[in-house]
Amino acid sequence: MPEAKDARKKPKEPFPGAYYLAGAITIALMLFFMVLGATLPPGIAGFLVAFVLGLTVNPKYVPFFLVAGAFSAVMGFLGQEPQVAWGGVALVLSQVLVKRFNWT
Image 1 (cartoon, rainbow, N blue to C red):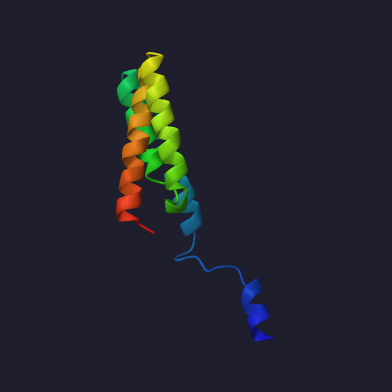
Image 2: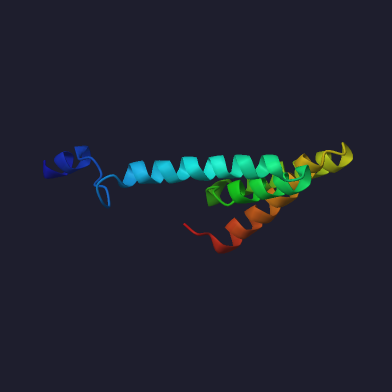
């Protein structure tokens, strides 16, 4: 019976307002990368944004993101779209890092 009561408990925050602070930091980082991506040349912006976002992927989905990155790189270079091409290269590199170091 006590196990059922524990299962319904809300998870405790590390400190009051921690989840709000994490949300604010996430939104600030998204805005920062949007502004940074808009001010850089397309190839560099695509690489930077895809690399940082690729580092946040759950390791169990790495093979799918590797395929998506390779496909994007090939199609981007063939279609002369530097943002897509370098974004695909960055996604592949970030997935190699996630698979190698498995930070979870």
